[in-house]
Length: 135
Image 1: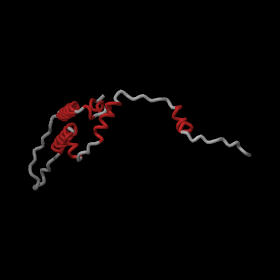
Image 2 (image 1 turned 135 degrees about the vertical axis):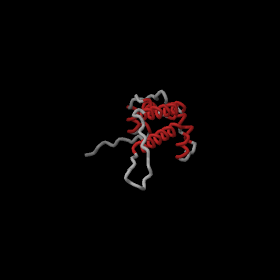
Image 3 (image 1 turned 90 degrees about the vertical axis):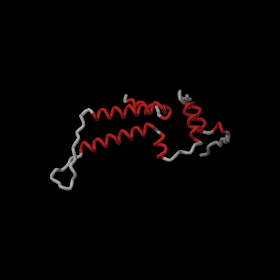
Image 4 (image 1 turned 90 degrees about the horizontal axis):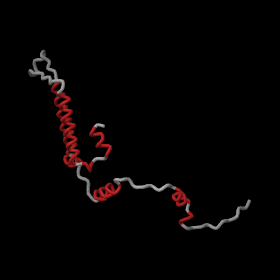
């Protein structure tokens, strides 16, 4: 069977990919596209600092780490029990904080995290801010 030979059109417009692109629906840019593009362009040329410098520059991370360390220290103090029968262990007075102190620490930590986030709103996406607020 002989098929009639059609002349090949080497132009860009006859390419199958371009034909598919012509059929695709156009997409519009989002409302924050220009802001995101400018921020990405500004950050592109900057060298990223060491991880510990980034951690110290980000007040939210420092506040969260300080709150977590305080909560761990308080938990370690409250959960530690002294064995009175052991002669080698020093006498430890067990301090039991009131039950609402953990809620107080949590509230202070969340408040500090939110105030740090307010200072640097551009560093957070909308979903991260919603998670911080707790909605």
